[in-house]
Amino acid sequence: MDKKHLTDRNQSLSDRLFSQQTDAELQRHIRSNTELKQQHEVLLSTLLLEQQLHSTAANEHKRLVKEVINLKLFFKNKKCIL
Image (cartoon, rainbow, N blue to C red):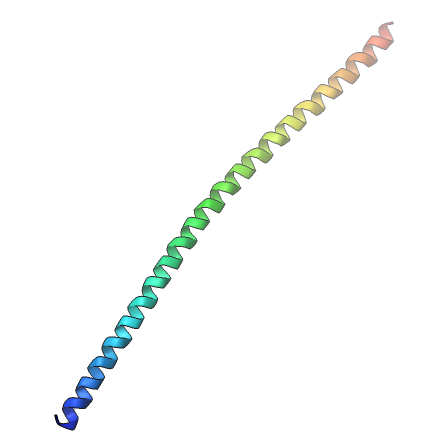
C-alpha cells in the first residue's frame, strides 16, 4: 500500500471514530436532557400542589379568624344584654 492510501485510510478511521464518539456523546446529552425535562415536570407538579395547599390553608385560616371574631362579638353582645 502506498503512503497516500494509508493516510486516507487512517483519516477515514479517525473520522469514523470521532463520529462514533460524537454520536455517543450526543445520546448521553439527549438522555440527560430527557431526564432533566422529567424532573422539571415533577417539580412543576409539586410546586402546583404546594401552591394549592398553601391557598387552601390560607383560606381556612381566614375562615377561622372570622369565626373567632364573630364568636367574640357574639359573647361581647351577650354580656351587654345580660
